[in-house]
Length: 356
Image (cartoon, rainbow, N blue to C red; front, side, top):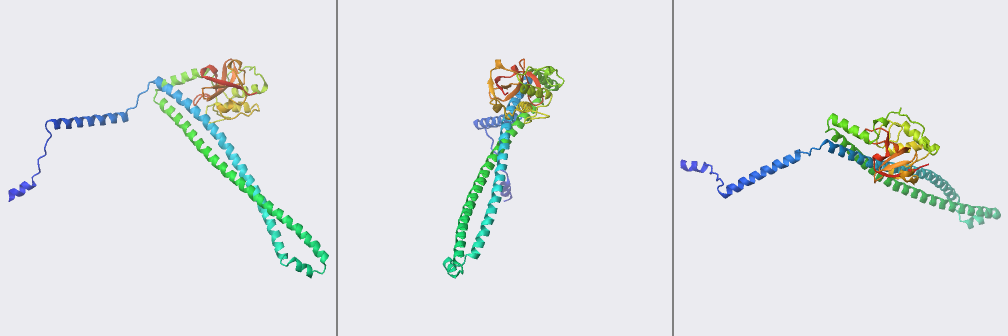
């Protein structure tokens, strides 16, 4: 009996794989471990970029950020216009509502007075009148007053319709504004993401490599000899007219000021913000973005460039500078590179516009 209970509590022996089954199990275990190791390595390993690859990628990111900046500028300009339009519609609706309320009050007073005096049938009032001629004269006045009341009622109805239309237009403009604000946020986030990615990549370089990148960027944007010092010799510029000369003088005065995306001065600029501000100082209003500024004047060929012309770059018309003669321009290049003089040959030329 005791032997039976001991046998009942004894653990069964585990059977081990042998032969082909053992080989299959071992193969699966090895493959699983190898896959896990590979996945873990793929998750942790990031391709190591060479300094040259980092620099090329940073350049692309800066260019992409400028593309997004110009889209941001355009969306901001449209959102500002929508906000102004909405405010104007709301103001006009408020004025029309005040006039409508005044007309309603006047009509209500007139109706109350008529009700108080109009309870007797006109034929009875004529029969009871001691002076029928006077009564008939008063009745004629009341008819004319009734016509005026009808006109007032029609006027109130018309005003109600006008106020309703204004409010409907304001609602439509509000929807447009919200859409443009959403577009603005999208482009703003795109700019920030591109610039953050560029900074993250630059941080992978050594200090010497970063310095080398900045030197190469300077060389590609006109070099430090012509770049930022506001004491750079200006010399007389043979501008074709006084307005062009004033725009160029403003651009010279901006040398050395930092590039800040979305900025239009006076302490910082992006590329289209600089050209807009320069021409504004000359009394000319330019649109906000590169792709609208190119249509703000008469197109000129590269061989016909004159000081004061706007010069544009890249297929998407994403960069602009102010031509100052001698194959040179003043422009706001990118974050970290202040307003400077540079050759127009450093970027893919896309066209030019003469504003004045």
